[in-house]
Amino acid sequence: MQNNATINGTGMEDDDPVVSESESESEEGEDVKLSEPSKTAVYNKDGLLDKLGDISWPENVDWRHKLSVDIDQEQEVDVNDDLTRELAFYTQALEGARQAFAKFQSMGLPFLRPSDYYAEMVKSDAHMEKVKGRLLAEKRKIEEAEERKKARENKKLAKEMQVQKQRERAKQKKEEIESVKNWRKQRKQSGFAGGDKDGDFSLAFEDGKSFERSSKRRPGVAPGDRSGGKAKQGGGKGKKGFDKKRKDREFRDSKFGFGGKKGLKKQNTSETTNDFRAFSKSNFPKQKKQKV
Image (cartoon, rainbow, N blue to C red):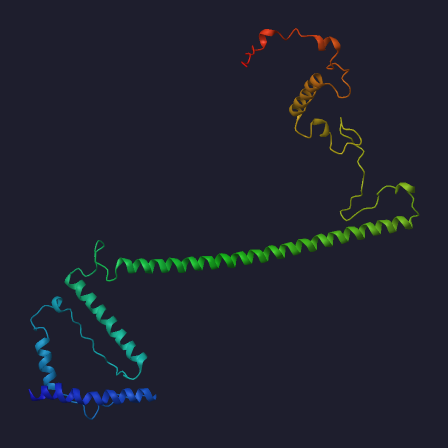
């Protein structure tokens, strides 16, 4: 009991200055090495083993009730090295899981979660709804950023294609102008053999074919008609539209004439003015005499 009191009393009181000193030293930026125990530390081995016996499982209890696995650490680990220490913890946990897995299989006990297992979540539905909304918002932002990036790339590509087409057109125009200049130069050197009509275009162009004016004419098309005969078809609407338009025109001509003077057919004369046959007394209502 005296040892336990020493552990609970003096040990705790002695640990406080150690912690405060370590905190003060860490604030100052100096590394604290714990390779050697403190001079004021109390190590009561018998008391610790006694407490361990009180809280430990009995020896005759089956393993599946306590599920404890002991792992022997063969190599010493430096407690001041964070990476090595965490790696040792991970290695021990992994090895313990492997040994427990092998024990469960040898004993034939089920240890995996069933497919229809239902457990209530620690976080509430409202919290998970907020998390889901945040994830969807981030996903939407990423998609919008990708679309904007794609639109910029497409716009840049379209601009490059437009510039390339403009260059090709300028190059083609320049080549055509050069070919016409060469044709004129050669024609001038030949002494204008064709006369005032510019002669025949017998000069071969880039494609190797000479220019030949076509003498063929379409049947039913006037020489000066540039519409190809569509002007006679009622503006290209077809034969039915043209027939309907012609019938409407004939009906208006028969009803209203062709303009100009109408021969004074609707002008009144003395006979038409004095003709009151269409009017009779019965057509007019009788007027009542007003009383004076």
